[in-house]
Length: 110
Image (cartoon, rainbow, N blue to C red; front, side, top):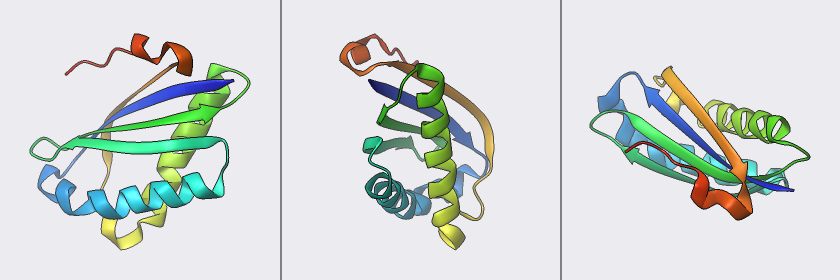
C-alpha cells in the first residue's frame, strides 16, 4: 500500500538552512533511487525560520512501517549530505502519515 508521509522539521541555525536545501534534496533523491519503496521525495522550506517540510510517498504494509521508512530516509539523506548539512540539528519534528489515495486528508499547519 502507498502512504503519503509529511515530516515537519525545525532545524536550529535557521540562517544555515538555505544553503543546505539543494544538497539535502539531492541526497533525498539518491535515497529514493536506492529504495524503490520511496517515491517522489520533495522539500519545501521557510529559510527564515528553519522550518522544513519533507514529503514522500512510501510503499509499506502499514502506517508504522511507512513512518519508519520516511524517518530513516530523511536521516540517511541528512547524513549523506555530509558537510553540507553538518550544522543541521533537528530541534523539533512531527511526522504525519495517511493513505496516499487520501493524501488530501493530511493537514499540515501553515
